[in-house]
Image 1 (tube, rainbow, N blue to C red):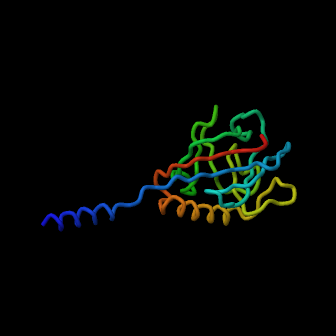
Image 2 (cartoon, rainbow, N blue to C red; image 1 turned 90 degrees about the vertical axis):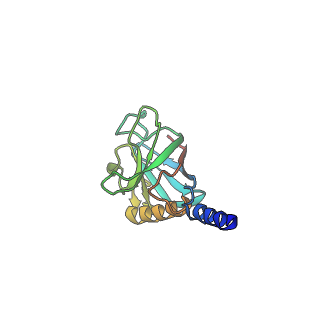
Image 3 (cartoon, helix red, strand yellow; image 1 turned 30 degrees about the vertical axis):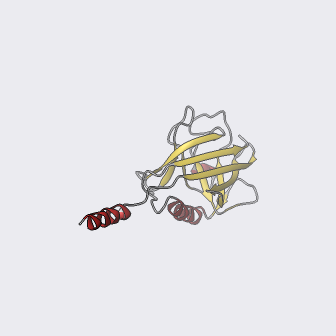
Amino acid sequence: MKILLFVASFLSIAALPAAAQRVTLKIIRQHSDANCISGQISLNGKIMGYTLERPWQGNIPLISSIPVGTYSAFVRTETKDKWRIELRDVPKRGNIQLHVGNFVADSVGCILIGRNLKGNLCELTESQAAFNSFKLEFAKAAGGEPDSDVPVSVIIEGAT
């Protein structure tokens, strides 16, 4: 009887979903001018595409990129597209998200993800496709839990 209880307990524990794995996003800003900031984004070390942000304007909400730093983040699902990464504790800023967009005008202080950069380094291509790939890779890295409370770190390095 004790063996059956042990096996039943073990099977109950084994059936529980695995805890979400920490996901680390790293953005390395490689280009900065009066029109934009662009760079590359990796997910747990795997390059996922390019990023585009507004130029540095002293961290002014809605019109500036955010400061270089390390931020905690979470998956936000209450948006019109139902899935974004939102950064926490950005100094003097809120609602900073990673999302779809090909042009600086598509961002109000957020970070856009695309497959490639155009020659001017201030325009992305295939943002929706890149974001869809990013979301799938994120789910794999998080242990299959793309919409749960996945612990996320976002490291931003390079130009401001």
